[in-house]
Amino acid sequence: MAVSKANAAVRLTPPTLELGGSNAAIILEDADIEEAARVIVFSRFVAMSCNNIKRVFAVRGAFNKLSWEIERLIPGLEPHETSEKFSERDVERCNDFLSECREHSGVALQVSVFYGTQFTNVLKPAVVTIRNPEETGRLKILHEETFVPILPIVRCESIEEAVKRANDSEFGLGASIFTKDKKKFEILAQMLECGGVYHNDAMTEFAIPGVPFGGWKNSGSGYTHGPEGLLEFVRLKTVITEAWKPPKFLDKLHLFPWTETKMKWLKRFLKSIIRLS
Image (cartoon, rainbow, N blue to C red; front, side, top):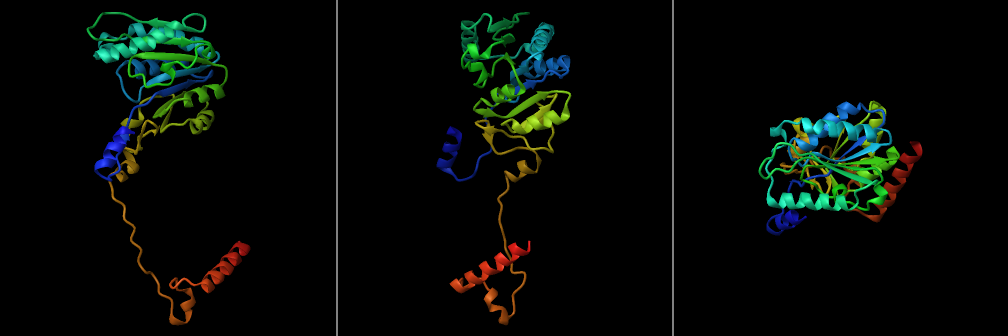
């Protein structure tokens, strides 16, 4: 919003803005859990990106299996895969997120931080499993942009709850749905409030130059890639030419001057068309 206001103050050129996201992943019970875990760990922890998976909502039986599989995979990451440098501000923000989670730690919520080889200014992957989200209140990690390596996994009682929690964010860049049922994926994809939805995948949209990439809500405005992305840099102009001029005896068809008599005639004509249709 600040960028848009600053731009408007100096010029009227519409900006294209990509402002980050808080991408959700929804895991249904019929999903390939091992594959889902591999995609999520890669998308969340290999590098920090606006299009990372940052929130996971697992339906009923998928929750325990997915949490276990993700925690099994993280310690096996190569050091270079988790060695991204962070600023002091990033470290403070990460500690703030984890401190809030630890206040609720117990039956409802558990925090796992995975340490390994130590690096300077490196934040290690952290997984927060939330079994009873109603008891934890409105956690920041579920609603804010977490540009640090923290992954919350939330247990949901139903698919509807998972979709509702995924949409409960001011951001709407992308989302992932893990299920073997393609029709169910297509239905749920239409229910999610974001610019792109991935089936059993994540982050690949930006790598396909033929499709538009952009977000909803506070994730930005405009698109890059695809025809829509090209049009963001095009000034449109409408040119209307006279294709046919009616003969003199059809003067009543002329638009100008636009008289009350012509209006009555036009209304009768349109009503006739409607009746015939």
